[in-house]
Structures are given as C-alpha cells and as structure tokens.
Image (cartoon, rainbow, N blue to C red; front, side, top):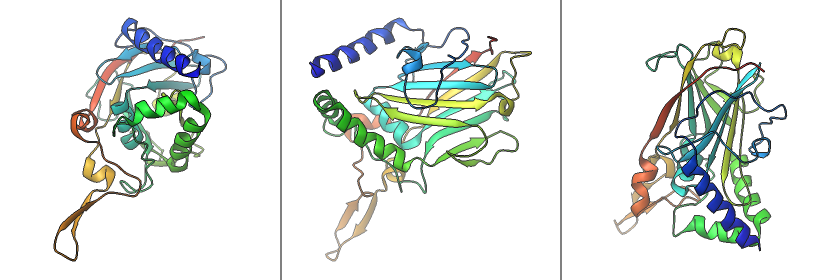
Length: 271
C-alpha cells in the first residue's frame, strides 16, 4: 500500500508540473499559518509555477513583514545540485535585471568547499530510485537519515547587497532571515526562505514591481567532491574523494555541472 501511495504521489506531481505556468503569474499573500520548516503543509503541497529551465516547483508570496520563497524539487540531478551548491535567490528592487546592488541570499552553503557536505547520493547507480523504493517500505527511516545529514551540515547563509548585514550569517542569526530545508517521506525536497521586507527596501504601503532571479549553481566535481590524485608508493596515481562522497558520473554529469536559472517579476500584495 505504501509503495502504491508513493507512486501515485510522484505521478500526481508530474501531472501537476505539466499544468502549471513556467513563471509564477501574479502575487500571493502568504497564509496566516506560514512556517519556515521545510514542509509544504500550509501550501497543501501545491505551488504557483513549475520552471522547466531549473526543474523546480516554486511559490513566491509575501505578508506585511516578509517576502517568502518556497522551492520543491524531485529530480535527482537537481537535488544533487541543491544539496551541494544551494539555491541563490536575488531580488532586484529597482526592477532592472542589470541592478548590481541586488539583494541576494544563498542557502544551503557549507564550510570550506567539500568539507561537511551531506553527500546524499541521488544519481549513482539509481540511488534515488532505490531510496524511494525503500521510502515506500520504511518512509520514516529513510527521510530521517537524509534529513539528519542535511541538518547536521547546514550552518550558514550567504548574503550580498543587503546593507548592514554580514555576507556570512549563521542560520540562527538575529537578522530575521529564516531558512529551512527537508525531505518528505517520498524523498522530495522542500526549501523555504523568509526575508524581512525592510532588508529589501520594499513595503506593502507603496508596492512597486521588482525583478527576482532564482539560480541553481552547477557543481564543480573536483571542488565539491574533494577529488584528489596522488601517487602511491609504487608511483601509481590514486584518485580519492572526500569522506562519504561518490561523484556523479556518465549521463548525469552535464545536468549536475550546468548552472540553471530564470527571471520573474513580482509586486507585493496587501492583505
């Protein structure tokens, strides 16, 4: 029964993606019960758009105090990119794509290149398929292990273009920028972000249209997986990776090493 439910959920997501616009249309006031917890409960697992360039579902919304972004992903290559290089969200308050002072938030990021990365394997030898099969039989166990890897390694948020805010923030900082990420019991991933409007110089009192940019950086296999080549005692080069890493190979390499992105426009809405 659990296996059938899992298949139906994945089929439902695929069908939904075909019906959604590529870029979110219109503005949305955030639910009163919105919570930055890596879950889609307040959204009923429904989103405003499915972007084909990045293969993510997403919703942008606001209330009187914050701008919110929720990203939902199921594609294994996309998951590899996000859990290694994060999601970059830029807000160009001027409405111009060329704005060099755009506010930017990147999460998750990890210390010192490949150190302390979660290394959840999605694209090696059908790992995602096998994980989802296992999730159908024992969902709590699989998602618990994956979420533990995420949460034990996530420590920082990178920012730029936000006056008075450090470029490297703890996820527990007092600046009001909130982030969260989690896998559900189907191994689908959800990312949530809240940025105080005051940091973006935006307000619902006199709202103006602004541009936003969502970017998924491609991985650098050597850098992100700690690949090194050294000679052993016999003079033979030996290739090694960071502890726990298993770098993507073959058909997956073009997808995970390419940076994908898209632009949209949004105007804050009043309640």
